[in-house]
Length: 360
Image (cartoon, rainbow, N blue to C red; front, side):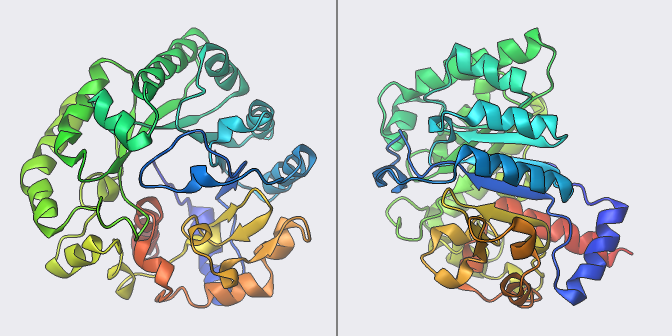
């Protein structure tokens, strides 16, 4: 995913860093539900019971507020975001307000009607889960027999309608890398000949408890020596985009970094030499209204990571509130436990921002 820090953003961010106030909230991720219809072996979200969340009216008002604050992208997620019956209306409202709407989905509900509705609503980016070229491996990891076929059909529906309506939308494949599928990853790229995706991101397992599925040191070495060169060549040949860090070097490059990755701490050493700017430009809002400073924080049961709740205060009051400012004050050299397992996307953003700020 491309990230562009323009001149005005850079100037504002430079002013905000000393004051600890939020800059423009460039990208906001909104969780629409805690429910999921998949049964992934490396995730427990599907075990959640139904819990009431933000109303349609409150989400509309949130979208309006974010538009007024200059937000560029709103990313809808879950659970499974398509389980929220109002998802098409939310995407359409984001589009009407001049922002980019993005959607994360497991693809199980992506039928012909929903695919057309997403395109007509103006969706700009569809991120869909697909773990293997082999249907058996994908269905094993996702826990739903027949899911591989449904996803491929859904992607082809989306591509049909984006072409029919001449709508520019990126289709992005997200694959969780485990012991089950890492040797199969080069074949996954060959799906480009079957389904018209534009970008691919390979994601290490986020849950630190999933040791049995994470790659060990030997397997990471095998991945770098044998798998990665093929991936690079195929990406260039098939013209597939990807984030460099998450696509290729998500396990680090030094023995120390790789050992950290074996324990699920993929960014254990990154922030020793890099600041985190994410809380100045990004926030995650849960389906019950809690505001978090990044997308990793909600997966940790630490109440101190909740910056506020939009059911109690406006987003702007939380964004520039004392708790958020106190959190940003620790971002020069982040030392929170969650920072050791940072999202590959956000870590990549931090490196881009750091480089641009230093190049002035």
